[in-house]
Image (cartoon, rainbow, N blue to C red; front, side, top):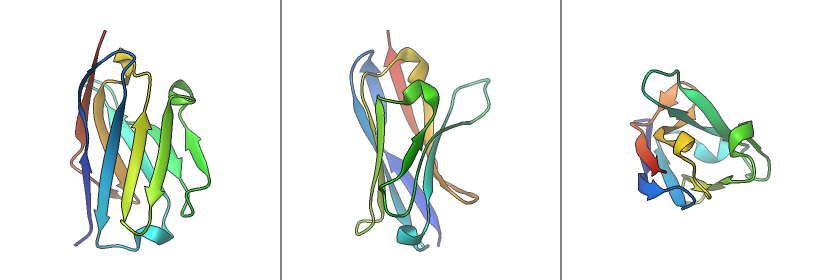
Length: 112
């Protein structure tokens, strides 16, 4: 069955780092681009970053450029989001995504 499982969220202070992981199964992970989104209460889900199948090309939402790094390990079918210098505005539930498939999300809380 097609599945995405996120992990790695938590409570951190502003300026600290977290690495999120997304384990994929049930589809040809190495052949598809992948995305991260995030959502905070009362707001629509917003796109954060995208990576191509090779992992060499990435795009980021402006507010996370230079702080977040998206990577993938196709042999492990896992997507990673390294988040540095976190800000309170980065708080939310983070979801990995392919096509119309979403994981359950992992919560990130950044305290000021």
